Image (cartoon, rainbow over all chains, first blue to last red):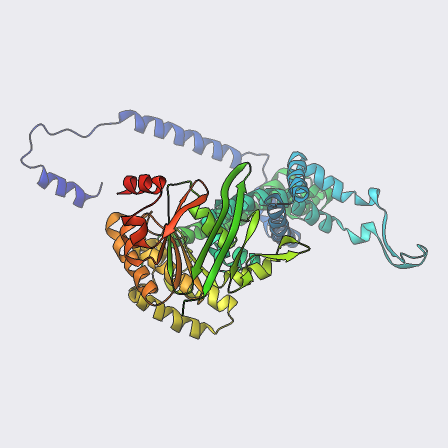
Length: 294
Length: 255
């Protein structure tokens, strides 16, 4: 309580009888100090652990390959998020469609992808060449003349495979986020737009989607923060991300612990920035809801 | 010369699953007149209104405006739904005002009114804005043009909704219980705008429970019950000398 508020109270209650004393919380101090001590002790123990070589951490923290890994992780997360969002929109529209076949496909996609662990999906994509060793565009009339062809391993590099796996996974989750956003818009909005003669395209783009955004953006933001961390899984197929690069260095100098600390520090920074961005976005949206007349 | 029929509803049937909500409803609305639809809730009056601009499909019958069949066309002796784009174009000539206003909360009052004209009628944004300001003047809300709907009272929102519908220059205005969601002290300002509109020669179909409005403004009063029109006539005929027992019963309950 501020001093001003306190003195205002004192003045107002000057003549009152049976004043109630402030409640005291002696145990709060005891437990607070105890908990803080445990945390400080734990942190010091980790940081001052003799197994940890601080010189190595400082040496590799901004190494060129680590920075490339950070860049790749960000690029991976952004591209997979964009493709995943577009895919998620399609999934959401399918799930809300009047066409029972499209609805079933949308439902099946979400159910299937959400039950396959992302790590398994990444391994599948990394091994696409086992399904199809080549991609050839063949003359459809004689099936002999090959117009163009690629070796699958050249076409789907580990980096491309990583994007595919993350995007396919993201589309299922974003599909649910977007679907609930679209459903949150009052049915009367669609009716009013329809009655004005706005076609289905304008009704969606000018009336439904802008309102659905308020519901979609906050969970989409946290999906993106999660995505940044999930990119680390692509290190199993050497996707070129931050963790891949850190492990490459660790494989040569055997400083596993130090490089994990370096990777964690960068993840902390990148997700921290994304989280700040997300909360700014949410504040903006809240402010939009409290707009008053000018 | 008698005014020509603008809207001709002929033998319209409508089912919700097994529930027969409209059982062969016919109604003519001459140009420049006001028809008020009365009746107990569930009698089908709102459904009939929503069938006119095809917010609801129909199962038999036809609705024509200016001689053109709305939403359906006849082929090989059967009625077939027109393409969505055609239906949307026909809807542009039919204004609708809803019980719960349904203004677009993410747009300002002005944007609510200019959205459809600037998207659909291909008029310039400037022209649409000039027209919108005229309409806001007409409904008495020119000073609220930059406000968002959430900052307006129910009565103000409904007046904006009327201006929004008028901005498309419709041939007919449909009102679906426009004052039912309003606090009693706000009903008057909305009814006044509607009276002005009627006096200006707008063709209107109004589903309402405001008996005094129906008596004062309507050219014809139509009483529905259980999916059929049980009685229609001038306000004097219906209110002062109802022929049907069910009409008398209904009027006794609303008074």
